[in-house]
Image: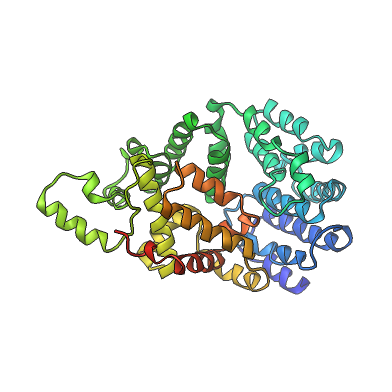
Length: 390
């Protein structure tokens, strides 16, 4: 393993900070066999490809550390082990980066006091919202399977942390968050921002994203006003999510175009209980399922990469997927979710995403493209109506 890691660390894309964090993660991996207390035998498969994560040069080190520590916490089932790992991480990171990694001070606060609220308060007092949300992610119970007593003991903690961040501060949180991982931040918002604040949060996203990405917060929030600055090609893409006969007049030429477009997309049957905004959000989800099931053409890949599921690291993740495929529970969750969408059981797009986020290995669902495609294909094959309900 050392020879592989040495070759990886010598890659020209790495800067000193990335190398340091990579070595920290490798050190954590070496600690795990002696620290883990309640993990399944194959738990180390989660950490086999830690250093490979850094083939993406724009990956934010703090973001990676937060997620890995969250996974370690889940695998060990012990806060004592988490403190040990945090102390090791802090020592290695601070030794190698000096003042370049001040966020680790908040991790130290957590490791010493075991008080997540105090660590978050310190971060918020210093207006370091990125560190605050990273700490929140460490303690979030949905990243992996948790023992029932752990979930009950920490229930509501993440929501309390997010409650400290005022609406006007979310723009600062989003601006500090690496755009390459905005999908996870968006799910954070969907989980914890009230319905009245959702349009504000999505407007923030639209402000900081380039016009080609504006379709994403527009689709999630249902706010067509977010598309004002979108270029023509982006607007065409957005409008393709709508049922043409609902969005245009009765012009015959337009109707012909709509018929042709229907052949490329699947649609949710009319449901009077859903708003028009939520109906087209459901259509987006169904089209997503259909696209994943059929495979990615280049043009479609360009379209759907905005949903945070990219193929840029697919060649790195395939070996890991061979050892750690999605659980049967998650496959069942995909089937159930798709089925409920078809039946019109969801009252809002937010409900759909919240249900998806509750699956036991959600982190893998959103990161491992091949496994996601496999899961959705299994679900879609059992739902023939998902292919032909236009």
